[in-house]
Image: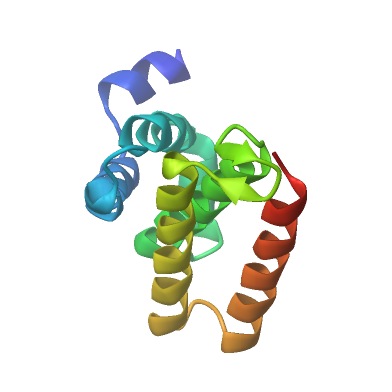
Length: 132
């Protein structure tokens, strides 16, 4: 019963999260469909979204950026966006660029420190080099 009402009456936080995702993905061209599908699936998990925002006190833009970096990390580590080991394809290059944009926004908005961003970027660089 709860799921029926959640589908009919989408919580405000979920609507705002989806609009924030759309804003973030306006820069994407090659990867927009892949990322939007995955991000919307995560955004539709109403219980987790509401918990993150209402209980954990996370801001919607922060949650959208965190979801994006998680999805991008998974996609880039999968090897599906490589031409061969350590070399990204066109979609991989776009995802890598979006990753850096998201990391920059996390830093600018104060959601992450420079050290955290540097560590995440180094980790991703190492993972890309070994995937594919």
